[in-house]
Amino acid sequence: MDTVNDFPYRKIVVTGGTGFLGRVVVEKLNAHQGVEVFAPRSRDYNLVEAEPVARLLDDTKPDLVIHLAAVVGGIGHNQKNPGRFFYENLMMGTQLIEQSRLRSVKKFLAIGTVCAYPKFTPTPFKEDDIWNGYPEETNAPYGLAKKMMLVQAQSYREQYGFNAIYLLPANLYGPNDNFDLETSHVIPALIRKCVEARRAGQSYVNAWGTGKVSREFLYVEDCAEAIVRAAKIYDESEPVNIGTGNEIQIGELAHLIARLAKFEGEIRWQSDRPDGQPRRRLDVTRAEQKFGFRAATNLEDGLRRTIDWYERANY
Image (cartoon, rainbow, N blue to C red):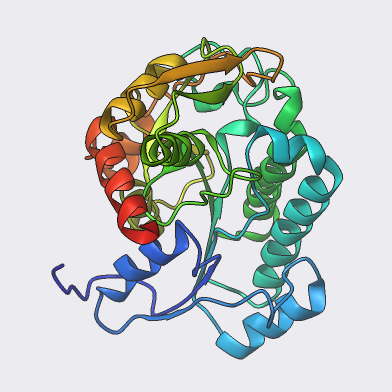
């Protein structure tokens, strides 16, 4: 990776900076000369409460805050924890933006979620459609909590001149993802099931839902690149989608993962389990226009890298 010294912010706090996406963002930021990145641990700073957030900012005195920390999970985990997902995500965003404003932080980058879009948004999802309905029920509390950061960012810009921007990434995947079947999203869950079934000689795996809904998936490295570009260049109030602009049916995805993981058995669909939102595909025009971002990793290549990483890490 080339070392460059043209990044406009010196001291940067990345919440969630030791997590799946955060560690890649921190790595990309650290490639810039003269940049000091701090990734707080939750055991040291409870971001749900105002006092630890204030202490974090006083300890680090950042020019830029990139807020990636979130309480997240797949459909089942969302269904079991709607109150926690709403409250903790809402309070983290609210406290961080307010305390950053009070300390005159130069820029705040908030990461939203595709779950913030209405359940029946026309595809491709355009940023201007984000308020045209209620989110899909299984993850609405999470989606709405994250969407409140957009309201706060825009209203703080209007009243206080606070430079806060808001990005909406597609569903992420890649190495170091969460492969815990109780809490994981669809790609890591299917990878783990297919690899374990192949190694155990099992004849089938179970998969949630009907397989008929579609999703858009973004490789973690590409998302990190978009975040760093936006942090450097983008200073406007409108939300920006981050994705590939391509969707795939979950049934097709499952067979692709099975082929790449060399699992030759059957995929049995559990149609009594929820599918979630019917379709997801983002209009990614604004990201290219505003800060020149285009995703570089196609789905098959990204899945192959992720499967290879999972096997190396676990066997």
